[in-house]
Image: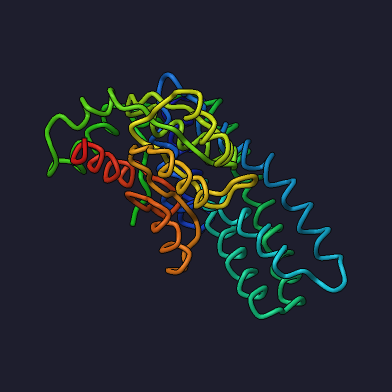
Length: 151
Length: 149
């Protein structure tokens, strides 16, 4: 496939991640830290996010199985998960984390469980989309300028 | 997909236009310490500083920050997270100030209540920024390093 066409495809994939609300401005901040000396910085950071947060997710899952629920502990775990999600611009995941913490504040265990299932779903969807995006980007090779999302 | 580094630096220059013209030149002479237990934040903050030519070191909690100063090292700027195991950012900031450390300490935290922020500031911060740290936020911190230096 012609190189320019591949770059356009990558650009469209990237734009859709913003348009569909999966990513926010923070992802662009990470892209701006990528250069010739650090050509895979964004992918490295995203990989690190999925590696570190998988442990947090397991901890939250285990904590949600306890009876009674320890909302302080749950909130602490979710604070960390939200922080990491915010750092890579994972907009939908972050939103679910925020909702979860609201449920923690009022001691709504059912709300926590429901929201956490949704957070994991968004987390998994984003992972699939980003993996596909990075794979496509690698195949198309580097381009000169980032395409900022249309606002 | 890749934005040119010059583009990024021009953006940063524009954002610090109001300050001293030698800010970017200064940034290459500044040393910094990143204090954060989260490896993701460590990576991002290290890269943010690196990108501005700021030589920096990373430690994983407040005690390590104190220990590195006890070993004789000093930094112009310390980016201090709040929630950390062993010794949190509030305790570490208080301890460093008690030790006579006059570096610019910028609290960088995801905590958002005024009470938590105030407690952190009162521990001895010179600046406070909410996570995630960005180039623009870092530029505003660097302005303070120049002003107070």
